[in-house]
Image (cartoon, rainbow, N blue to C red; front, side):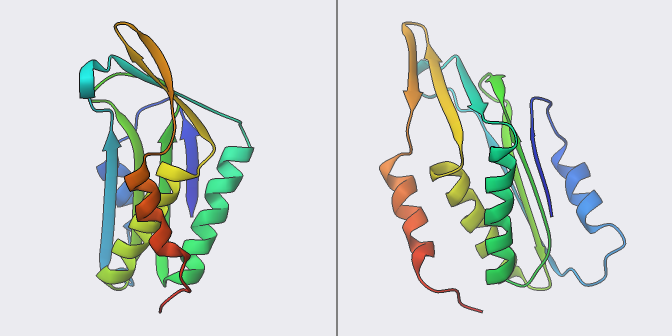
Amino acid sequence: MQVSVQEADFDSAAEALALTQGRKDIGAVVTFEGRVRADDGLSALTLEHYPGMTEAEIARHVAAAQARWPLAGVRIIHRIGRLGPGERIVLVITASAHRQSAFEAAEFLMDYLKTRAPFWKQEQYGDGARWVEARADDLDAARRWQSPAKR
């Protein structure tokens, strides 16, 4: 497991290769890359965090995913700072022997990152800025993981 919170951009393909290189026990790799959308005239998205706490909280949820699904590897990168439309924000890679575990673990981790990870997000528009809270549909998606783990 590797978790990074950083300002620097990342290369999704290089990260997936680093996670899987030389491994013969991995049959499925799911890669999710989130980007800034230019919805409703958005000019920038600024992400802030509390160093140390944010990484520890994400790592705690990765450990929960590893306890719930048989994962062979996990890589998460979340960017902070000011990002413009089209820029990468987040990368979640899950690897497992089988696809269902890799897909479900990736969705679990993204639902956590969208709704409960300790990031503060501010959207900038031509007429000002506003702080962003989790959307209702993201909260609804995250609720499905509250049931007991299935293996």
